[in-house]
Amino acid sequence: MTPQISSLLVANRGEIAVRIFRTARDLGLATVAVHSDPDADALHVRAADAAVRLPGAAPADTYLRGDLVIKAALAAGADAVHPGYGFLSENADFARQVQDSGLTWIGPPPEAIEVMASKTRAKELMRAAGVPLLDPVDPATATPADLPLLLKAAAGGGGRGMRVVRDLDALKEALRAASAEAVSAFGDGEVFAEPYVERGRHVEVQILADAHGTVWALGTRDCSLQRRHQKVIEEAPAPGLPDTLRESLHAAAVAAARAVSYRGAGTVEFLVTADGRPYFLEMNTRLQVEHPVTEAVFGLDLVALQLRVAEGAALPLTPPQPTGHAVEARLYAEDPAQDWRPQTGVLHTLDIPGQVRIDTGFTGGDTVGIHYDPMLAKVVAHAPTRAEAVRALAHALAGARIHGLTTNRELLVGSLRHPEFGAAQLDTGFYDRHLAALTETAPDAGTAALAAALAEAAPAPDAPLAARLGGWRNVRSQPQTRRYTSAGSEYEVQYHPVDHPGVRVLSAERHLVTLEVDGIRRMFHVKRNSNNTEVYVDSALGAHTLTPVPRFPDPQDRTEPGSLLAPMPGTVVRVADGLAPGSHVTAGQPLLWLEAMKMEHRILAPASGTLTALHAVTGQQVEFGALLAVVQEEPQP
Image (cartoon, rainbow, N blue to C red; front, top):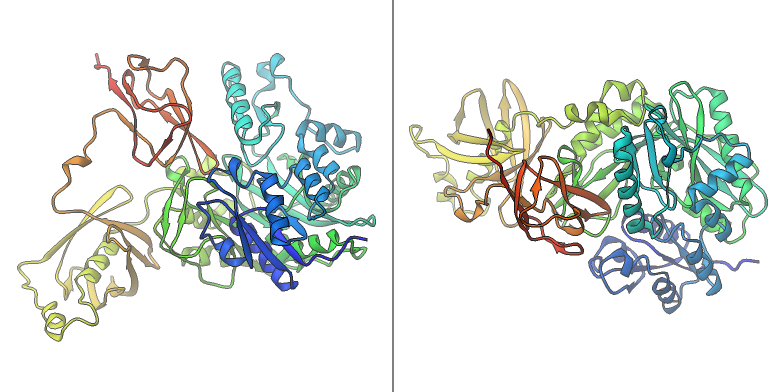
């Protein structure tokens, strides 16, 4: 009989570690965190009863070191290990090592992980079990009739090692790039190809199995809204599926679980074509990022059930009945308008109102670094109907105050309020069609700039009476002037503290300005960061980050024309073959590849011309704004 668990180590970080610790506390378990050096003061460390350092910063030196994690568990007196998701969660060797060390593994049998770890082997098994599959395509013999193709890493997920190929001439380079990324992410460069289904839906089934032969199919989830093949918005149940299709997906998921004698929580993923045909994609032998929507609909705690199953408990023969609808949005520190560029720095404020569930690994004042995924939080709304859940989630995100970093918050709100999403017209091409419209510049920031200027002019509450009175005696013929930039535009505000065209100032304090704009009373919440380099203005009209423009620009801010600067801190993982000073380059040609926050970014030539300088080498760590190369543009004829 499996011994009862008393102390749990979570071999992970961020929001999933915090979420697992929450359940562990509710069950009366002691908790142990592990952390890299950048995570020494992270929220998941602060949330645990004890923490063990994994020396280093990069995942390969810390969270992917199974030997160090097991050593930490034994040293801290833990008797069980939960892997969360990502990192070592689908590593069969690690699962065996945990068990061989006398610890309880909170996950499926290592043999099930091993079979499902390779997508190619998993598909062979699923074909034998009668689960529908897309036929593979041999890249060596692919023809135009096979296009478009989807290249996928056999050993991993999360969008890494994945490429869409629409031109046979691009296939060779796409295979090489996908394999290289797969090696970097998973240590295995195997890549396979299959047909790419245009406008398909990503639908998955949550399963839970015990050691006594019971397998639950806990409904469906739709995860079709994706960027870079990574999910952005998920919901349960998947809307608009015919009952026959839903039942066939449940049956296929249960068959997949039984085929590998599965135990614990897992997810079977399917691609559903526009005409309603389902195809097996993969089985994730772990807890999914989007598991909270299933928990909300079924009223379950999947982590608690994972722990009970690991202790040998039997599930009831049937799961509870689902109620209502749940929608989850992933809040990322990234700029969707700039090729989803991840953001790093201090998160000054993270405040999300409303009756929503928030799973996060950050609080205000924490730093978002370069080494890990840029997800700040998952925000989940549950309501009796889909429309109500979507509306509640959009309202909570729209009213959030998120200061210090550019995020995808506006994209999420726009997506949730988009007519296609509201009508449940879901497919993986949503952002291909609508990204440009959803990332248009926010509404005019002029009123926000006015509020920021008024707040700046307002005396501090503890200022002497003379200063507080004097602040309101400006001469009308000599207005005050302030300039700000926001989203690439500059705003000059000339104002009197008492009167403005079209606007009445009802009150102006350091952190709250109330204006009557075109007859409507509006409140503007104003906050400055600690060094006064940015001003954040939040109101019902939207959120704006304003940068005060100095009166005299710094001449050192100028850079040589054609300079390629690092758009983020990261690691140079590749330099184009043969690239050297003197090389001729063409506009749009990839010159360098940077990896930051689990994503790879290409640095492209800004114009055709000659590379006059190259300062980057493979393996080099660079800071934001570092000079990587210089391209001298060739004269136009």
